[in-house]
Image 1 (tube, rainbow, N blue to C red):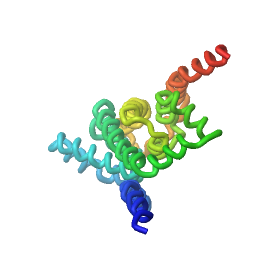
Image 2 (cartoon, one colour; image 1 turned 90 degrees about the horizontal axis):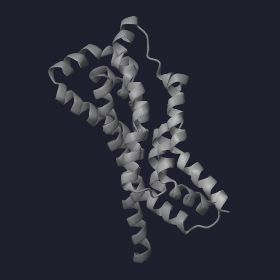
Image 3 (cartoon, helix red, strand yellow; image 1 turned 180 degrees about the vertical axis):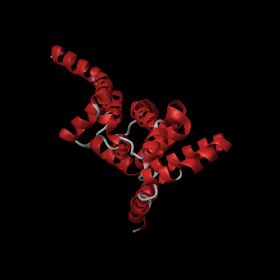
Length: 243
């Protein structure tokens, strides 16, 4: 009986970090949504600017820390946080802080998932046969391309883009590099919107968070996604010719 209970305990311990993240995410979805909002930013904009002017480095560190928590625990408000980064630090520094923090937070989820459900699921998929094994092998052969695509395409939820690579047993260095580079375009867009919030506040308006879907923004991002898929297409065409 001891031998049968031991694997169960081990499994629970491995999954504990991810379970904790999911619990915090669920609680945050119900308790923080009203606080991490554009209206909260608008109401506290002068206090934030004053604090930043007096404590720039501390403000940057606090911002990065909060952003890591938001992403690491999948809390609501990532878009508002990105706008805040642009509002406080401008497009360039705001983007650097945001991309760095988002990558760290995403890596936390990735590691928690990979050492929990991801390890077990990955082993089962590797040992499986048929369609599931073919899908996994196809992704494994084109990991860089697939990782960049799920980061660049705006319709893929960030949380999903964090979990899928963990379940596919993607190496950590590939995940970190593709995450950091892949989220730069979207982060820069939203950060630049945040950098212009002063004028938006002055007009009493709200920012256009759907700007990323406008053609002049979306098409270049989709172009990058298509470019990242080019090696997959070349490999497929070459493979067919070889047959």
